[in-house]
Amino acid sequence: MIHNHLANGGPLVLQANSPLNHGLPGDEVLLAQMGDSFEIKETHHVLLRLHAPCGAARLIGMSPAGQIEALREVQQRIMAQYPVVQVSRLFDVRYPDGRQRSYFIDL
Image 1 (cartoon, rainbow, N blue to C red):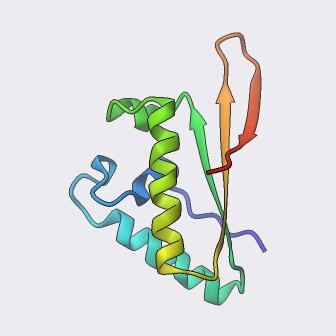
Image 2 (cartoon, one colour):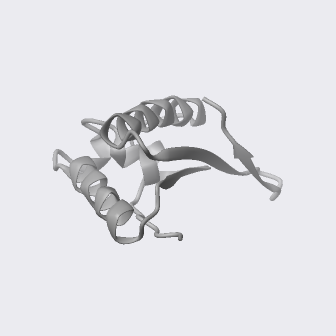
């Protein structure tokens, strides 16, 4: 079962104190909604999907490498709150020449 939780900045908003949340508890709300989904949809798998270029990451001065590092923090946070959840990570890259590639990230 797939259930999307979308936000501008994707998994970057799940960082504690993410500037993308503008001082609001957006990370806590999204984590709680994910927990509801695990129960309602009976799923225990999360796909954290980043993309580059990312306008939200650019707004806060975060490079693609910074996005990947943030993903590590987000994964640890999800797994600490929901230990039975499996987390996968995907990074979609659009290159200047128009090519697009998706990469699974092993953290």
